Amino acid sequence: AQSVSQHNHHVILSEAASLELGCNYSYGGTVNLFWYVQYPGQHLQLLLKYFSGDPLVKGIKGFEAEFIKSKFSFNLRKPSVQWSDTAEYFCAVNAPRGSYIPTFGRGTSLIVHP
Amino acid sequence: GAGVSQTPSNKVTEKGKYVELRCDPISGHTALYWYRQSLGQGPEFLIYFQGTGAADDSGLPNDRFFAVRPEGSVSTLKIQRTERGDSAVYLCASSLRGANTGELFFGEGSRLTVL
Image: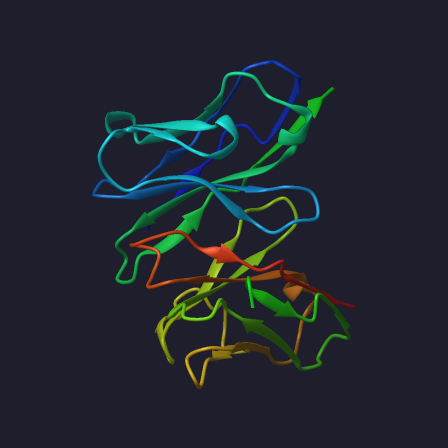
């Protein structure tokens, strides 16, 4: 069965610091990859997704992620975080298990101090 | 509606009771997913509907859990003989045709507490 690992469970940064959150998955075939974000008190929403093409994906709010197939990774990056980026971040992988069911990592809690 | 709507937002019940959680997906979305999220964990898949039928129910933990989507729109997750371990946030998500073609749109969840 596919699995998703997010190694950083809690990250604390100051504003303007750079961010990189790790995501590794276990499935060896074709995958679709997602990063979702959950701001305090809000529902999960999509930050960015990779289906095919350029492995460097740009998302909303200045976020980007790079798909490295050889490393089974899809790390999320932002060059300069803001206080408003404080949220939970979830990596998800879609792989054929009959019906393409997204499997989520356990999430990373990011706190950005002003 | 504009987004995925879930009711109730909060439900407190006693061990052994029956619970229903409702999800109203985005209009026109054929795919509907139920996930469960425990504290400090990511969403855990329960069941996926394509139209009216359950295309994949492999995530339902046991036969106390059941879900329906009779008209291909609103879905109800039903939990019988609730246990304290069922306490979690139950998330519903919909997608236009399925996660292999696009993103999931999530509701705000139903927080279930079993005393």
